[in-house]
Image 1 (spheres, rainbow, N blue to C red):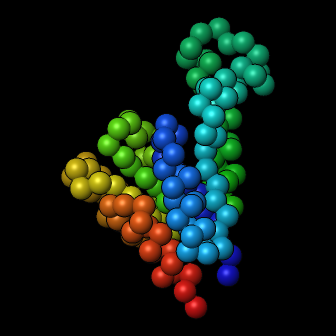
Image 2: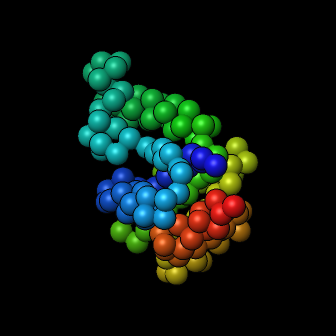
Length: 147
């Protein structure tokens, strides 16, 4: 059986590549989706399409509307969502995407370190599964996909 999974979370490091590599090592038949990982393109896309905006508020608004459109399309295609919260970056987009997954009734695996147990307790309670590492998330997928 083949699955599609949306990988929600910050785009500043290679956690997605790590997860995809581990899934490939386990021979999991999964297509992965995610946000635009080219940060510059993600920030510039509104002006690239709609033209120069008058200030940063409108520039960010134009880009976010297109990024939100992309996220919604891909998340709607996905069978499940994995949302990773890390230590290093602000996690507003991750929280928003996890909330959208819950609202769409998409099965959700939440990855968060022990240090974020308290700030993410409500979100963790709404996720289907909460783990602390990418390896644990992969093992959930292995179990789920096992015949």
